[in-house]
Image (cartoon, rainbow, N blue to C red; front, side, top):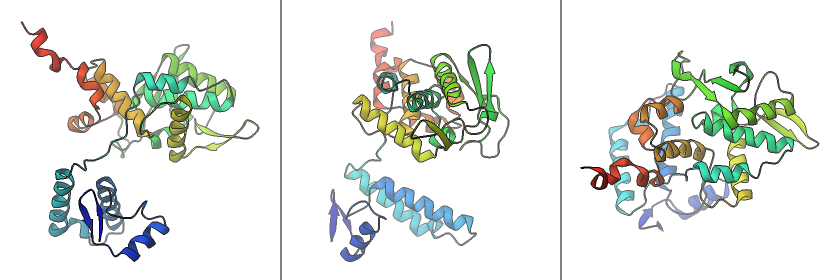
Length: 278
């Protein structure tokens, strides 16, 4: 039997080793809670798309998952969240972006993703010039026509995401240097400074990780850290929740609250009621 933080995996050793060798598991032993929940969700979606009977909806499976979550929680194996890229670490990452074509792209991408409300990596990779509109002499408005929370493309006021100030300047510098006038905004930069096809969502993650490493920013970061960082920074600066949600396009208050990291808590007015209430 294989154990991991007190949890026992009954998967036969040979099968476990085969799955690891094939790349379906990262390491031997019990799966992390996040991995388990994610794989069940993918399996459920696959059955749904093929209009097959979904075993993930079986009451016994749901009961087992509920008990599994409780077992992980009792052992302290809580869901792992990526660290938030708040303003200070983001500034350090931006400082690594030089005036090369790649540097201009990465600077524009990071600021676009963060400053426009913490865009998901799929939204950054899918950003298209046809949804970008100039406002005034220097700023932009990007219309997020499709997102995870608006898959039907419903026209809503909050679909318009402002890209202002330094974010607009960085975006303008990238567009001028790359000579992009239509199609995908963020493209591959090949050897010799040639602009290629649009980047993939995975490339957004790689850019974040690369810039974190260059800046010496310690932590467990991914593309989603930009989204978490925007919400956390908004919490630190006491931005009203409604304004934050309008920028992020969250439809659920509990969901957006889940993005607040511990860094925002010390800046909350609620933590100092005994000092301010008279």
